[in-house]
Image 1 (tube, rainbow, N blue to C red):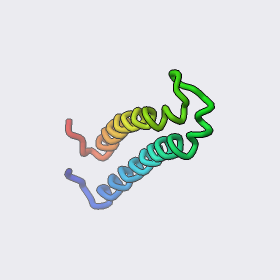
Image 2: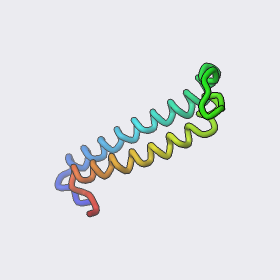
Image 3: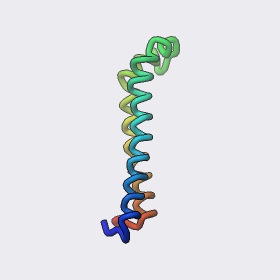
Image 4: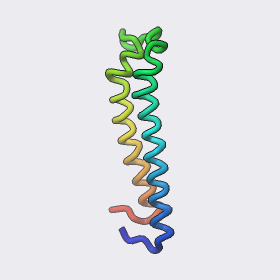
Length: 88
């Protein structure tokens, strides 16, 4: 990466960390919150014939994680273009 200034590099890194923190919070909320803490309450609802709390613990958290990977890639591509460090 060829940043023009140290300030620009720090701003890039700060935005990257902010994005990662937001996505990790979503992942934590889904995997720990929906899969463990709220599982009993969510089990009163059903999805594809399974109790929702069980579904989140077994499948939903994985699906959300995969979606978060794609969101991260998309957002980082935008961030790279913003700071002119993309690989086009």
